Structure formats: structure tokens, C-alpha cells
Length: 237
Figure: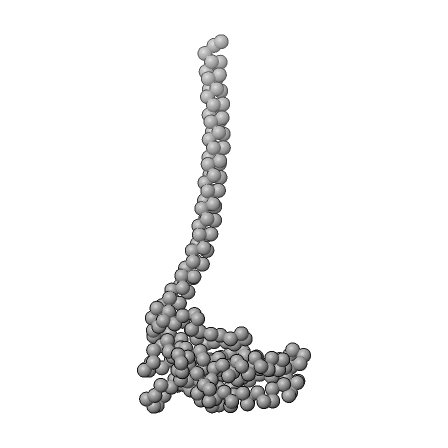
């Protein structure tokens, strides 16, 4: 075999080796790249999942933090706020005394703590909703709910509001749509807390259809009797 043929064989072998090496290198590169992409996607997915979870936990923390501030600063617990079935409330929380005062439309100057005024606000809203709403199929429950929030001398007057309950059978019930209230300044140095309460309502006829709606406003005077706030006087505003 002459030297030319030997050189050609060597060159051919080198070319084959280079081709095979390049091919393997490309395949390995593609495999590594795909693995990197897959790993990257897994990281992104896990990151997104973590972010969503983290956001939920953050939102829960924010809510808990607000409630904690509400309770801590004013000792108002969830059991202090009662919302009867079918009723609404405008009572809000906050992370500071000023924010709580603002969110609940309370006076900036008062002899009473925020806790006391918020509890009185809760009673005032419940009372107005109670004397506004009714269900002719539940006359006793309707009356008892309204009487629940008033002082003893006022009970007979409130009971008389329901003297004709159920006489008009075309109107089955009155339901509450919304409620809002704000504290009214007391011009006298006494222990009354006064709120103006505005309630939105709708009437439901015998066919379970909304037949009318409207709004009513009341000024409600409250006094703490035996550790509970009771309505001692009210008037249409």
C-alpha cells in the first residue's frame, strides 16, 4: 500500500471520528438543554404555586392582623358583635384606633371607649332592622326579636307595632337589604350613646316576588343596663 492510500485512510478515519463526535455532542447538548428546560419549568411551576400559596397566607395574615389589632386595642371580640339571621352590619375593623373610629363613623371625641360605642352601634343597627323587617309566618319570632333590644319600659310600645302584623296577606315579609349608621353627638353630659341608623328594605309578596323597596332612618338612644346596651328611646329621623 503506497503512502497516498495510507494518508487517505487516515484522513477518512479522522473525518468519521469527528462526525461521530459532533453528532454525539449535539445529542448530548440537546438532552442537557431539554433537562434544563424541564428543570426550569418545574422550578417556575413550584415558584408559582408557592407564590399563590404565599399570597393566600399573606391575605389571611393581613385579615388576622387587622382583627388582632381590633381586639387588642379595644378588647372587642367576635362574640361582642351579634348579627341576627337575615340582618346586615356596617361594623368594620381596622389596624389602629383611628382607623376603627373612621370605619365605624364614630365621633372623634367621646367619654366612651371605642369598644363601648361599637357595641352600642351593633345594638342600634339590630334594633332598627328588627322593627323594620317582619315575616307574617313567624309573628312571635318577629316580635321577640324587636323586644330583645329595648329597655323594659319600651317593650309594650314596641310590641304594639306588630298589632296588625299579618292582616295584609298580600305582603308576606319585609327583608333587609342594607344598613349603615353613624354616631350622633350628645349635647348633654350623661351616659346615653346616640346613633342615626339608616336601613334599606324590600317587601316580598305572597308569590315570593319583590313588590316594593325603600329606606328608613331612625335616631336611636342607648343606655348600658346590666352590662348590655338597650334602646331607651327612638324616633323616625
